[in-house]
Image 1: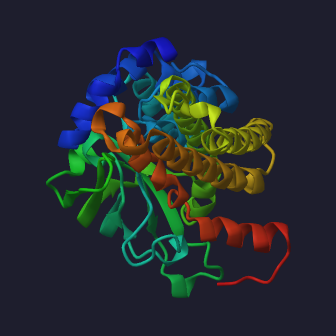
Image 2: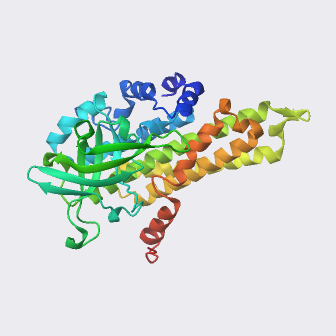
Image 3: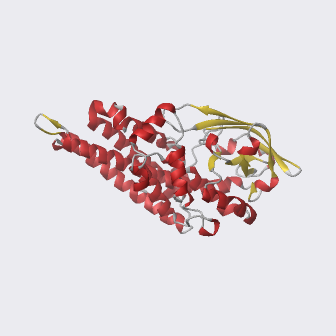
Length: 372
């Protein structure tokens, strides 16, 4: 993985960052090397690797100074298809996803009015004969412009007609190549980092009923299982980011000489680096534990959420420390620190916010009263 990433140095990412361009060559290289098919079984043309191996791949991408956000969704979104799709769906899509002929990079869940309150989403998919007709809007749907397929969560039964809030949502596999211009429209959102995120609008978009994943109305449960994988993999990316910042800061502190000695000789410089290292290592252990439980098929919601939160905090602390260690040079584009600083800031907010993680732990782990 590191050898592949060496072919995409800082200047490659800086050029893309200036233009907010998608790293197509990088994604192509990862696909051809089989890394994006890591979690797809060998019987469908994938590598058949474990979650821990997939986490190691994503960590190494970040630790090498690259940006896995351009492609990480393919690893965790296809898990919903693999776990809950029909044999026909898996045979139709997984081999082509594994080969790179198809890209499954778009995950249509979040909406402008509901945010992380997923059960309040308003996008509907109403059954008409052998199709579902989709209307609504998604936001922060990253990579939609660079994906062939979208995993879409929509309401198929009105909320007032279900007994539980978690019921009535379904997952559809949308072929965006067919829908684009036929009711599907995509609007890019320019953000503080190069993340290729978008708004997606659905105006009577027709999706074949055969593209329903699993049972109608059970989609929220299917999405939740995929979210654990998402959090583990993004936590691993955060560990990679933290390692990159720590290595960068340590090297600079050793070579930068002021007042006749390396700045790293000063406790005021070396202690923040050491603290960032401790924080990263502790978070790394939780990532490994979450991945282990996921592989064993155990309930890992607690560990996946903690891994994501601890990893994000460790990465952000390391990023802040790295800028501080470099002083003015930390803001210079050519050092890549300011780019990675912007990129890693995302993960204390997404894919789930700090407050939602703490609320989950409070209610579901500690047994405290529900706060919302």
